[in-house]
Length: 224
Image (tube, rainbow, N blue to C red; front, side, top):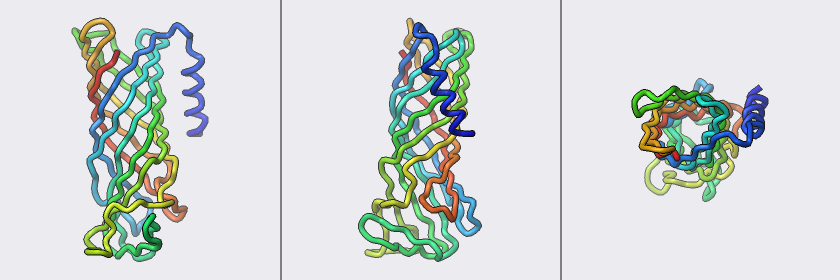
């Protein structure tokens, strides 16, 4: 069902009339991200700050309706607390890293991200137009690093080691956002918004558990 919905949105973007109005933008999105788990012995244990930056594309097929997309580099992640000794991690520098029971591991992840969805925009109210968007996000893993919790110290600790093969290459999710565009003249506008992103697919490469990656991002940028 998710694949059908995403395919339908991409198809809609290409089937729109060639004379559709297209706006581009550059945005910087500070965010707070966290991990959640379906395993009773593993739990999310806190959020970390991150940031996404890149190109926004709004293709209007009517005055107040657009298909939005873009491409971004996103820094995200979170903490997982392991209340068990059943799990080990393989890093690029050493295999079979043993996680202590009660240890909280920090995951720092970087993705190349492309969203696709529908954007609804109001008539101008003064200099401001308000919008809401709903869509899907596809993320391709670029980097993944792990950091030990308090259970490990000294040479035994993991301090930014590459998690070779531990994280899934592809991550899919959905997003809901609201915001405003402040007109500066012509087609130029400042954009401010907030977006909730919820992961749908498993972030880790382990079929025995399901880890979701989630975040709230704050969008600041310029549309042209």
